[in-house]
Image (cartoon, rainbow, N blue to C red; front, side, top):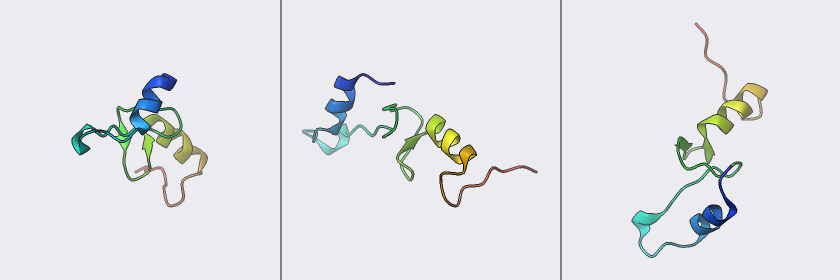
Length: 61
């Protein structure tokens, strides 16, 4: 869980566009972020295993 101050700073408009920090909307992590789902890899996996993300299925072969 990211600190509230870091989450608030990431939500502000940056001075330059390259300084934009994308964070997971559930937990606030910035590493392992998946832009298509707006989630980090850990939250993505939890929601996918519960079947809460439509169109995502666990791969097994």
